[in-house]
Length: 235
Image (tube, rainbow, N blue to C red; front, top):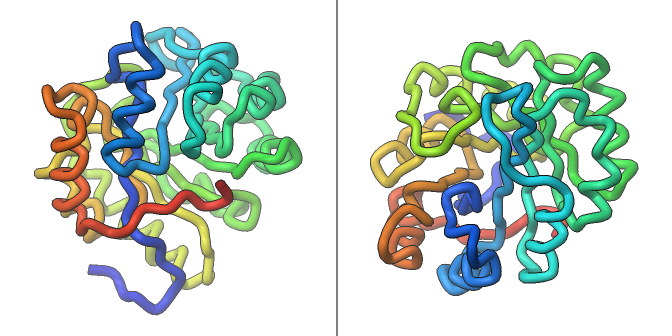
């Protein structure tokens, strides 16, 4: 367990709409609200940065009209800077871009904040935490991918736990007040390990929406993660 000398947030679980029944987005939002979630995670994939296609600003806008939950929009796409304003206007509360996809990461993060959204940086499993060395003050969230991005339902990569530990240690040393998020293979079995490593925001798709009883699955996952009270920064 990392030290508790620096800023920490309650543990939060963010259901991922990628695993929901997209034929009824309104109901997917409603059941997340009933479960007690305060964050929804939306995976935007462009078929180039990752080998899949999913949501765009129109879908984010449709979700925004269905719920007041905090929308955590994860851009898995090349040239994300070209679409920041579109996603912000659609209703994204937080926008996360991949360090691997940005030629000018600091400029992109500044543009996200200028749009009114919270700025996040995502790191693929093989990307070291040094990729955020010079942008800690420019971001509000760091996302450590615990699977290779592109598809839901993948197996958790335990090697990323050490990266999460190092990120948490650096956050505490710097007095950084943002969130450390993990995404990929998060279940009631893997949640305790990522929380112990220092993550405070857990994205879960199949473990929530992929189960017959979504509300019970959400509660089981949150309890395994420490049952911390959920709140969305900046919402």
